[in-house]
Image 1 (cartoon, helix red, strand yellow):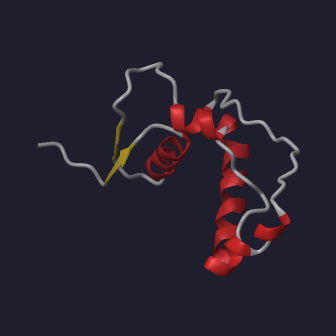
Image 2 (spheres, helix red, strand yellow; image 1 turned 45 degrees about the horizontal axis):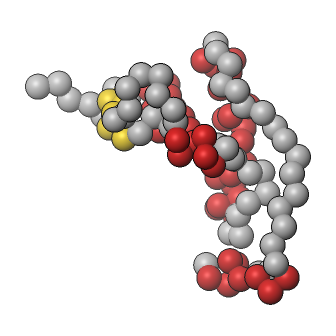
Length: 106
């Protein structure tokens, strides 16, 4: 029976990135995805695979967002392939009555 150091379920943005990171650290990784090769990556596609540079009400969350953004910037060179990562400016708007609500819940 073959064994692995890690099993990752889902080959979307997060699954592919963590699988690559673990394999790069010398771990044996089994990546499982129910879609046939070449099928649409729905979760990533519908969320636009957004990695924000400003998110995080807590320091640790902000640090994780910054680390994710840095990783996405280096992946094309590391993989030798176009990951279609694009940096875009956008404006996030929320209703005034919700300003600060998310921070209070944490």
